[in-house]
Amino acid sequence: MRLSHIDRIRAIAVLCMVEVHTAAIVPPRGMSVGDPAAFVAAAFGGMAAPMFVMISGWGIHMSASRRVVQGPMDISGWISWLMPRVVLLTICQLLVNVLLNVERGGRFQWHTPGVLTLLAIAALLAPVLVKLSMRARAVLMLLMVASPIVLGDAAGSDWTWWERVASDGTSEWVARLLWNGTYPAVPWLFFVLLGTLVYDLSENPSMRERNIAMGLAATTITIVIAVIENIPWALTEGDAVLTFFPASTAFLVVSGTFALLAHRILEGNESSGGGPWKGDSLSFLEPLGKITLSVYVAHFAVLGVVASAMQGEPRLELFPAFVVTIGHTLVWIPLAIWHQKYFPEFSLESLLRRVS
Image 1 (spheres, one colour):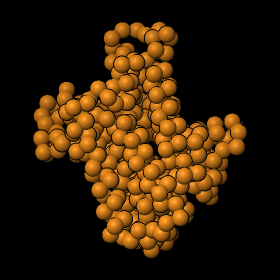
Image 2 (tube, rainbow, N blue to C red):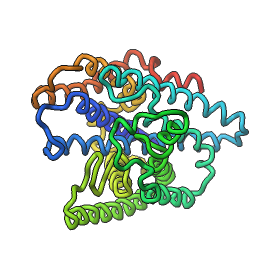
Image 3 (spheres, rainbow, N blue to C red):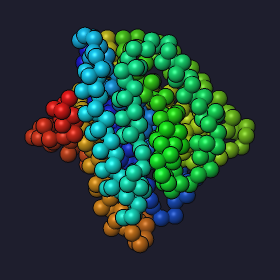
Image 4 (spheres, helix red, strand yellow):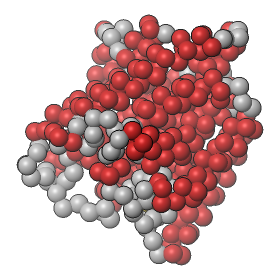
């Protein structure tokens, strides 16, 4: 089975993450959260991480499943498969934190857990998840969906960003990693589990389409609730139906639905032996999709320099900020094409393949 649509999804996900991170470092002057442009930027950000984590869960589950098909693996075999992934993802998270450290105008403490430590947890759980039935993983997904309600204030619903990325001692760091950080295992493993189901249902698009339909119906209900209650439908944080920090139940359902929808559209007829959506016209995205971890880390190096240079400087006007944000987002496409043409072996992905 061809997998070109997977590389395209990865590429779009990492581009959205670059866009929202850049917009956070160079926000335009005078723009409020209610501005339409701000809502569009936030929408890209709200979709980026769920799609990135879902497709990463897909990839981890695919690798683990193939290992199982090759033959039974003992504990030492799983450790030799797991440890390079966990170590590399953890080191990359620390590197990201250092590159965009708060002391140089950035957004992270050096030890802040994030999306890469979430993926490290997903890798650690892969040997268990690969042995669970689809029904069992679906039940775990429902538990993740309900977890924001169960956690309540423990998730830090009224925290500021700086409280969420700070931790005083080991116990608080573990709490940030597991349930009240930026990308805590609970409930963000929902998207990892969703990715495993997408993999298992790769040859059953009709089942995925039914799930998308149910998700869109639930999305409509969240919009109706927002209108009736006269509260914002979606905010990064605060009083809204959908919140990113912390991830609300409605956010999980809605963003999971749109991640599934994006995957289904880009897949086209590839699962049945045909071509992906738009055929070869989107193939220029595939080189970027092969090095998303490398680009994720590298773009923080660029933003770290920008954040340090802009300390104490006034914000940019709307147009220059827009040009910088879009320019920094799109430049990774030709850079990835150039990289894959001339230096494909020099990447974090290639390193992981070698050490595994």
